[in-house]
Image (tube, rainbow, N blue to C red; front, side):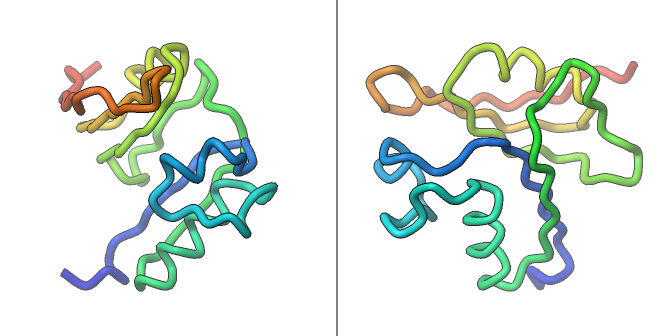
Amino acid sequence: MDPGTCQIVLQDFDKVSPANRSTGMFVRASDEGQLKTRVIAAAMERAGFDTRMIERRLLAETKRHETEPSLALIGVDKVGPRRLISDVGGRSQLTSVLTPDRSTSPASASTPSPP
């Protein structure tokens, strides 16, 4: 597969912190203080992917448009955002939640029912 044919949409509002260095596979010490979306977009673009960024919080009103990617790869460290994600409207989701001890919970996959 050609990475240039795959569009990746990144959504986050937060900046890289020291805690992200131990859990973020694309995060370097020099990235601290930068917006997470921009750090990850740069890494994805170096690999040849087409990226888009949404630099705001995920809200209950956030919905996926039918022309947007339908597969969501999600990494969250709080239960609140995970609950919101199920209502966004993707066809498939792969979610991994970071636990308080910084280990990752088993990933869960789901295919939401059509509305």
